[in-house]
Image 1 (cartoon, one colour):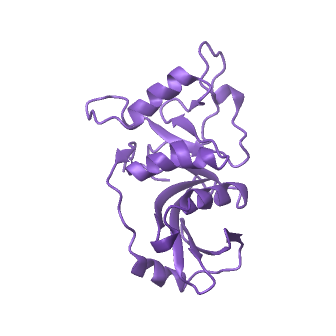
Image 2 (image 1 turned 180 degrees about the horizontal axis):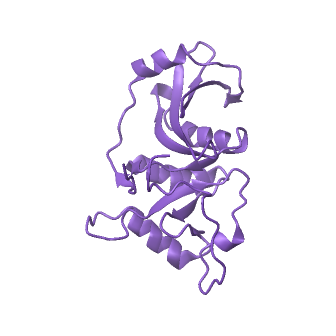
Length: 205
């Protein structure tokens, strides 16, 4: 099955009753985020993190798919509940996965309007600066290349279904913020980029 697109979808609620079921299977005590306990579970290539308060009330949930033998975690679900909305917990989970668990993060093929805000505004406000990955060329587009960055961003979220570049880009966060220089999209660059560093959505892996 070929998956090679980022779809804009409406914001969807991940049902809290399902998270309560999953919580029973998690292991806690890993760490904490904003005084909330990190509860962790993995099964096959699926990974989940649930944040709970001291009374085991659920604050936030994040689900990931482990890709490329665990090198990359692809974000799948992200939800904040009740009084914890507006506290940037989704972005803080992503930052925790990157900085503490030392995993590379990549956006899902489906993104809601709230996901766009998370990648473009919330994560940078917390000191993490996602870059855009071109799944066709393996090039990485940094904000310092303002022209190409804005073009890629507009293509990523275009409503034009006939745009041939609509399904070409995804967000990435490298675990140590070390992006190979030759992979950065530079006009007139001579070197070929390293391949196989990120998931290209060309096939299930």
